[in-house]
Length: 371
Image 1 (cartoon, helix red, strand yellow):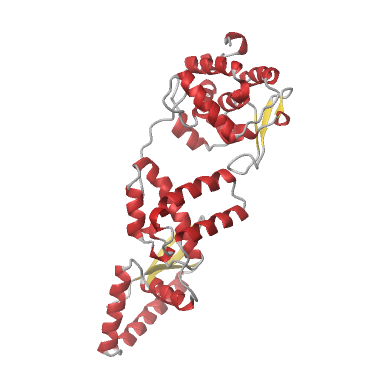
Image 2: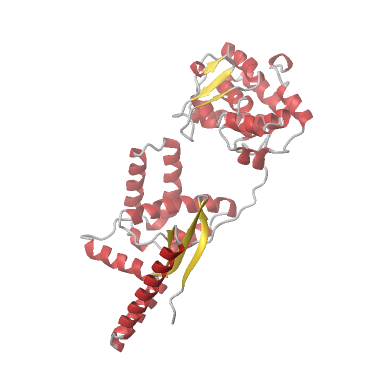
């Protein structure tokens, strides 16, 4: 039986090369050459080497061949190739003690992430999901967690959240693989989740006016709301913005790298509406920053004022992006200000409101909204 080896011309970063492609140990291998002769010579070597390997297999006693088939069947049952099974056996041989418990690996992962500079909000969310996953088997060894346990947990979640939860579980189990507690990450064998999400929720103009009227009477969250709704700061960014980050004279707002989730400083040149409202904030509440617990508490009160059953996710930032894009029509301008890519901006915010509605939104000014 011939060993399948192909030689073909292809472009690699704009350069024409010859590619040799073959299968080895269940994996696809490739090697590139500038000349056809070199590629043909390597292909001949690979074919000869494969023939030599098959000849060695044919010389094995039938008992050894039967044993190899049993090992191959066991590897397939575990969802592993033979090299992964060999790695597992070596790992088991090298382990002086049993694998740590699920709870212990979660603690180790979070400590490692903290040392690597992840912020507290990310770590809290990660811990919440992983502890929910571990449930009754927190004391079970991590190497006893397999595809069945992962799928059972994910099946209890709705389709929208399944992708996010799968990602967090993959973080835990991938960490366990890197630490030698697991041979393979079961999450790599899951089917990819496809979700068609509804468009993001945005404020109507009357809702914005109602919020601003209420906030003038309850100014604890006033600055946060203005920064997120009229300048498009992420909720966590608006929490940590100080007066020193705002330049009224030149008309810009700075978001520091340690404040934003993308760890990159940006300077926003928002529409004048935000600065007019910030002057009102400055008069009613000198302190601009707000803690997350205080924000959550005030959002509950504001939600009730609006008559909402629950606060709509990131509605302030979504509103700013949608009205700004409709008003100026430049995805590049708005994407730069919000720290998005143009593709993401168009995908989520294009066409959520009309240009007339956008004009009304940006004309919501202090003199027109009575407290």
